[in-house]
Image (cartoon, rainbow, N blue to C red; front, side):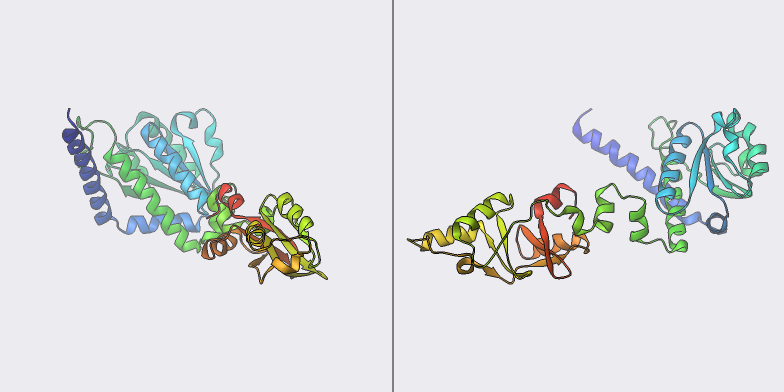
Length: 319
């Protein structure tokens, strides 16, 4: 098979799946609305059941719902009748996913899913199946054909299931008024969560370089060199007067023949960019990028608190 044929097959597969997604969109009806409202108004959690490829889809739907404010739990159909049914409480709603709706494991489980929960939502490609007939609400995921060249492997059908799960999650987010700050609460460890919640204070260097206006150039150089950031802050009576960078020192050396009497006050850069330690780290990054600088002076109620470095923020995924 040559590259052109490979691309043709890929395009064909995607076109088939796009077509099935369009069909799904066009047939969304009151059943979808009822499903969203039932899940939103539930006093319990959503139990998502599946087996085979549908189990993988179910796991993804559960992960999406949990991260967007709808408590959910996956239940494997084969394990359910061997004790895992205990996870279902009477106030819970069950979403059972099975394209055929007639899988033996699903059919054997249906009476218990129906009895133990508040409502049974069936996501199936066959509304006339056992699952369809026993469900309180049916979400029709019928597809005309799979993208698989043999029309056998679940491809279009699982794509439709996945997309419908995403649609449920998005609608539930809107109903709950779920915002980016809420999303961040469930993602504190990743770069997304850090960008939404992390404060400047978390990334301030342990090193706090500082000199006074009358500090000799020798001690200024020692302070800048020891800071690891190429900068020191000039402080007088607790007030931030300015900063001195390694660039300031280099420029001074180029212009001065005798540096023995040079003091910090002679080479200070006044009015440095600052940020309060309680601001979001992403705000610090915005300032650093806007002014094309590598460090910011961090304050605490206008008092010098420390230094935050752009490389530290980048390493931590702040952007």
